Every structure is written in structure tokens, then in C-alpha cells.
Length: 299
Image (cartoon, rainbow, N blue to C red; front, side):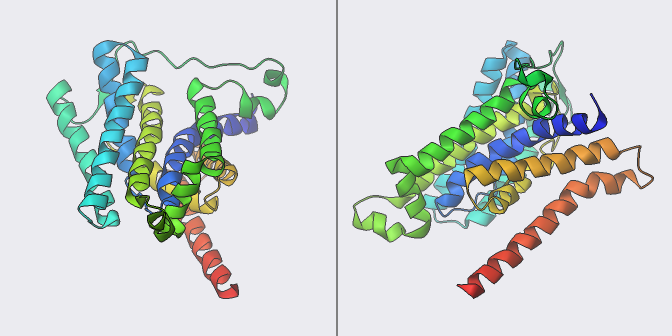
């Protein structure tokens, strides 16, 4: 495998948790709720997945536990925001801080460590080679030789697109963000759809978080490393459309993959190389903001 092939193959793996978090965040965004707690959901589910696998030895149970923990956090966030009418931004920030703290506390309680949890005799996730495609350059790096998580992330995004654009639930969900009073006039409760959107985001982030830890066989404090925040940028960069989101996630995956590959090869400080994905994220946020302002002026 050449250097370029390795970067592309790695980019697909790196984009997976971003794509899962962005898929979940897309539902809350379309419902008119900025869910900045994606980071915390990824983190708490990553810890829960490792803990469950450590005690049960079952990856399936680990993934299920990760999904449940993330959905519980999402449900709490939705309840406080929608029922108690707290500020969604402040509540989401509190959820992120809570996840960062509780994982360290629980790791000390269960494992007597300061946040690091290592799975004993952890097995690498099975990689699936797709016949015919596996021998085609570039296509093999994108579509073949990945774990089930990668293909599941694509499947969930495809299902999300169908739900959002082809079902009554999707129509009503999008109305929550644009014309919530229209739902009220029909006797429907917009907050119910927003609550469900939060739970969906928790479900998707639960899978993404379990991938972060189970793919490595270890949990370390703050291992989500801003992926929840980047997922928000992916949503806006993708214009809140599933087909664009997967492209945006792949671009971020490429940038991150390149920064990992460039360490030790380029004669620049390693800290700067590691900061490349976040610098790119900042530039993209600025670019999206400028684009939106220009678009509004034209309209």
C-alpha cells in the first residue's frame, strides 16, 4: 500500500465517528436545536463501551451499553432544555464537562486509574475485504478493508436521509426548525419531535463513541478530542444535507489522516502538525459564516 493509499484508507476510518456524530446531530439541527453535547455523548459512550466489554467480554454488550449511556445523556439534555427551558448552549456545554469529569471519576472507582482503561486481550475489529473492489486502486481504500463500523455509519446516514426526506416524521421534524407554529396548528407538539431528535443523536453518538474506544482497545481521558465539535462543523459545511455531510466528513478525515502521516516527515514542530485538523476546522467555520452572510444579503 502506497503512502497515498494509506492516507485515504486511514481517512475513511477517521471520518467514521465524525460521520456518526454528524448524522445524529443533523436530526437535532433540523429540529431547530443546536446540540453541542455531541462531544460529551461520544466521550461517555466510549468509556461505557470499554467498561462493559471489560466486565462481560462481549463487544455487542459493549456497543449496547454505549448507546444506552449516550441516549440517557441525550434524554437528560432534552428534558432540561425542553421542559425546564434552560439555554441549550449552556446545557450542552455542561453535558460535555460532565462527561469529561464522570469518566475519570468512574475509572477511578471501577479500575483505580486516573481515566485510562485498557482492555485485556483486546482483539482488533474484524476488517472486511469486498471482492473485486479490493483490487481496484483508490476504490479499494475507500470501500474495502474496513470494520463493520465504517459500513454501519454509511448505512445509518442512508437511513437518516430516507427518514428525513421520505417520511411524515421527517417532514414534521424539519418543520420544527422552520415552521414550528404550523405543527402546533395541526395539534402536534414540536417539543416531542425535538426530544426524539435528541435521542436519535444519542443513539448515533453511542455507536460512534464505542468505535473510538473499541477500535483501539483502550479508553483515555478526553479521547473524543473535539470530534463532537468537528461533527457540528461537518453538518454546517454539508449544508445540513446527508449527501454533503459524508463528503465533508471525508475531507476532515483526509486532513486528520495527513496530519498523522506527516509527523516525523516534515521539518516542522509536531504540535503544529497535530493542530492542522483544528486549524482547518476553524477556517471552515469562518468560511461557512461568511458564505451564510453573503447568501442572506443576496436574499
